[in-house]
Length: 266
Image (cartoon, rainbow, N blue to C red):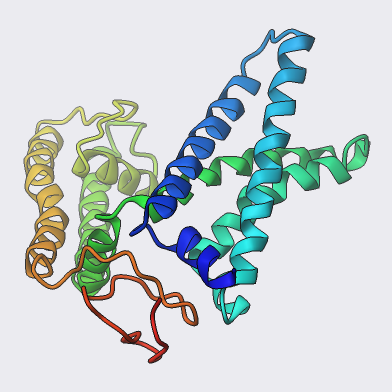
């Protein structure tokens, strides 16, 4: 029974596994919609009671799913402390915390933990097949992106300082170097709030150069990640098998043993 449940819960190569995944996706979307509707002011008591009842039904189903996942894996701690294990736990925790702390006036702030139910939307990443390819590309390009972000921090610090020197005597908006750096970040990323604007000719010229520079800079991390996706395009697998011991996924088609721990796959 454990092996059969494992195949249904963790894999999607069978009809029952696909049905289980589709059912979970439906429940996730339903729970997110309920959270959104609960925040709408002016709900009647009947509507509030209906939403709360539906939320508890979904919470109980997710709780059963969470403990079933712990039961069917060979090493429960591998799932509990994994990324998806933590997300699954956060998806059910707020409802029970809100129940235990209800009516406690001094701890009313903890009611906000119920909003963490929106973490359920992250459960969807488990069922998006291409997410593994994107995750591998991000991991492979993390060093390049880190260097790029470090370079950007240096650039906005220099540009903000220069802008402070130019604009401070004439413009109260550039009242300090940190505020000028904030302006440089907003301008370089092409956000452009408009709360601070240069008034001198030199400052406006420099701002124009930063705006143009921003378009080319935004394309850099996109190109880095895209190149890594292209490299891994032929090496990634469409297989949905998950190791029952270490929970590694993305095994090659036809694999019999886990490439990480050597455990036999279902």
